[in-house]
Image (cartoon, rainbow, N blue to C red; front, side, top):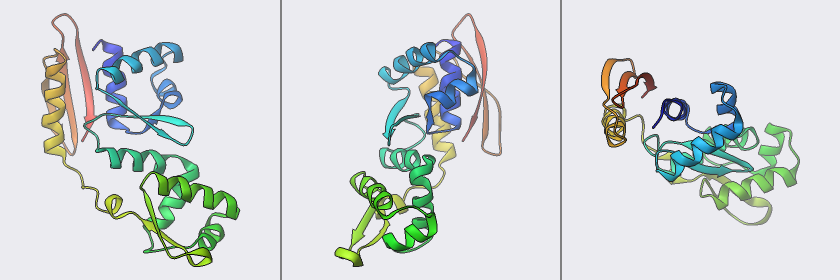
Amino acid sequence: MNPRRLLIFQAVFNEPGLHLRALQRRLGVPLQSLRWHVSILVKAGILVSVTAGKKELLFTPLSAGREEMVSKAFRRNPKYGQIMELMSKRDTISVKELMRETGAYQQLVSARLKTLKTRGIVESEGRGPKVRYRMADSIKSLPASRSMEMMEELLSLLRNQGLAPKVSRQDNGRLDVKVSDGSVETELSFQL
């Protein structure tokens, strides 16, 4: 974990579901260099890449379970996020209602629902024109924040990478940590 990879890890931890271009804009790192660093972090299991539509979104294994990562990835994608937001506010919804609310064509709404259903985010009931869609039970029951547990896992991950984390500040869901690999000390800030 060199300083650049630490900054990449920090950015993804604080904003799960970032894609490479957004991460590049945020950090000001050349895209090719960023891809190389991210590939190393993914191979090491420090970051996880999830495909949502045509984008590869990045998460830390600490930020969520697989279902939660996939759900967040699709929520961040404007094409799917609007549909998921509408579905989360209602018990069930039809394609016609989604068309009216989003202003999208039937084929587009149906295609997006099919993708969400394939990924296990959405379930359907009924047949033909009477099909109703709802958020999958596994997505509805995702756990709330688990900040203390996450903090311990985060510090453990940093120790396992050969860094010596020292908590310099902890309050209101924020954790400031100084890490040192023996020669360089870096200050990181995480939102739990």
